[in-house]
Amino acid sequence: MPSPNRSRPSPRRARRLFALVTALAVSAPLTAAAAEDAPAPEPPPVIEPVLAGEIDISAAGGGARMLFGDVSGDGRLDIVMMQPAYSEDDRYIGAQVQALTAYELTGEPLWQVGTPDPRVTNNGSDIPAQIYDIDGDGDNEVLAVVEDRFTVFDGATGEFVRDFALPHPEAHDAIAIANFRGLERPSDILLKDRYNQVWALDSYGEVLWTHRGNPGHYPWPYDFDDDGDQELMAGYEFLESDGTLRWTADMADHADTMWMGDVDGDGAPDITLGGAETVVHDSSGREIWRNNETVESQNIILGDFRTDLDGLEALGLDRIDRTENGYDGLFLIDSQGSMIFQEERETRGCWGSIPDKIHNWDGRHSDLIMVWNRGCGEATTISDGHGNVVTTFPVDGRLMHADLCGDDREEVVDYVMGDTAYIYTNGGCDLDSHITGEPQPQLKQRYNFTRYSAGEQPVDHAAGHPARSSSGRGADRALDGSAASGWRPSALDHRPWWRVDLERQREITQLELELPGATGPAWARPGYRVEVSADGRDWTQIASGELARRPRTAHHDVVGLGRHVRVGFTGHWPFTARSAGLDEVRILGNR
Image 1 (cartoon, rainbow, N blue to C red):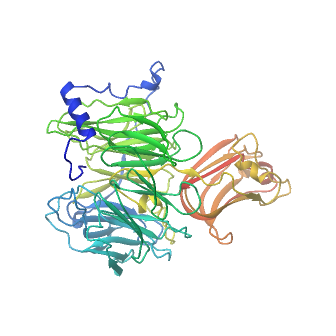
Image 2: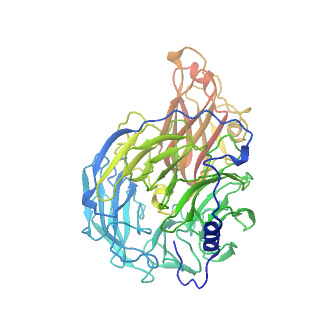
Image 3: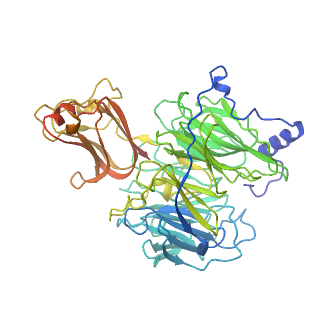
């Protein structure tokens, strides 16, 4: 997006002009520069999307964007459509909310707040609304800026709960939830204007601190030093939890996109920024690498898109030419900063593509690339990191993804604003599977939703923390980073269990359990369940499975909040005691 008050061409605009004048062509589609001599891998099997449901969202109005969250409190995700208030130009002043409309996944409307405006047909910036349990009572609320007030609505009914004044008339470009004060759970609110200032507030609107600078499109709170309170990457500026500026990245224009994750493999999270170019820094501000092979780096997302390469890759979109006959293209950069591929599109006149990462669409717990809003008649697709198309969707809409069917895979909602949302799956789907009668916690990537790519790669919460077990020795061996060692219960243990104290409440999104092979007959094969607890007394199950005859790594994508994690083994003694154990455990989640 353009920045105001530019007096001369920006570096990214100069590169765009250079690209046009010299007619530079990007490399052939998905050419692997990092592995030129490697044989091309076999393409993955094509997955045909299965339609699991349709939702009429026309009552939400035109230009309404989608949020996921369990607002009804039954354990299953719901949909809240947020329509922005009408504006002739949202480039320099952020939007407010015109209407909110909530739906069950099965299509039943739950409630509506506000009256949709027929003049609104699209949106060009973030819409200041999020779903989060801001008061900590266990039920999600809907937070929104409406008519110049920060407003809290009851998630189940849409009824007004409370509101407070904004700290500035333009402090409504976006909302983020953070934990700057080191509380038990994130309870602080971050507001920003379009390009100049951020405000940190408590949950009742009292200003904690403010910072004026170059905050980019969507700042990201993150606990880099793992001390319980979050720092803030506000565009190119790294702020301490009290708002103090620590360092500024040497980059032009403003940050369009950012992603946190360990890029260089040293075990510490890094910061990948996209804007004028793509640059990675560590949390002290040291530059790790810089790639300037793109014109305009957008939609940066870290992931393991190429499992044949070391480390994480950075997916992004290059807006090469934003003229009437312009175009854009996907790109992928390896963990050392070298370009793996740049896409060469044949169509011209379309440069609004949106890439995103989808995890475990294929049932292999892999990171895949989905891209939509291509225009020019090009399809909405999911591809692997080699550029092989895995899935093509029949509807040219906007994409959202989450585990909606309880199958440990992510499903896709493909929606046309002001019309219909289509739920697509990879195989069968039971939309009632997540209904438990208990609210599903809202995790960070959902309560800090943005149209601009910003986020983080899950980190291991368990490494280095104290573990204990029901019996046997070496509970800590399941956390030592080596599958060659591990924990085993004693032969007399009828109900073996293993647990770890994460030292404070954590958001848990993934589990990786390296399990030994089971002994004994198939009917006596032990099972396991994984539970979380805030206090070590009351437990909630987040995953379960069964041991196999051979050792294996069990992957689970989960939604969990807790300080303590317990793995318990079930079955018939003595087979349970003979087979139970953990060679290695990784408990991944957000910071």
